Amino acid sequence: MTTVTHLTSGLVIAKVVNSFFSQPLQPEHVIVISAAFALLPDVNLLWHRKLKSHHDDFTHYPAAWIAISGILFIASSFLGLLLFVNTMLHLILDTFGFTIGVKLLAPFNKREYSFTNLERDKADWSLKEKCRFLLKNPGRLNMELGINLLFISFLIFF
Ligand SMILES: [Zn+2]
Image (cartoon, rainbow, N blue to C red):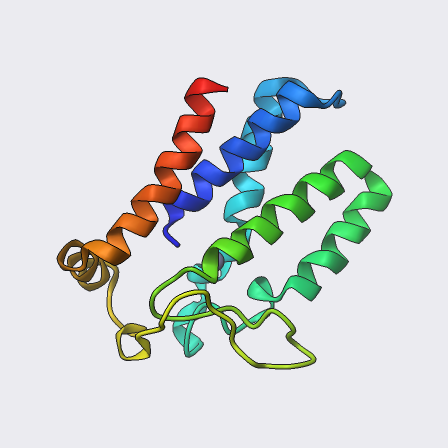
């Protein structure tokens, strides 16, 4: 999924938290933190050129985020849960990508999982090339847009 989709997912989680749960922070702080947490697994885009794909290191391993969220939970149960929900949703959304899946059971099992038919030959493409591909393949684009539309509708109407 794209950064935009991950960002909107973080905003949806913030809206749910601010609307339905009592929490220790100001609502605007929850929005900023939730958005940042939703993007956090992709922080390895800063160094992923050394990897085969940016899903190949611990930032896309659910086990890593379960551990990190657990440690954060000890300091702040609210932030620990917010990190856990955001990073798990990020990884679930990434299983709908079109070039690479997610190693959901790593580091114990390196099998890649995806809900779509992966086109691995396009994994090395630049962002510009991937965007061009998405524009020429409405099915792939519609899924990305549909998820965003769902999230944005939730943000507007609920
Ligand atoms: Zn990701």
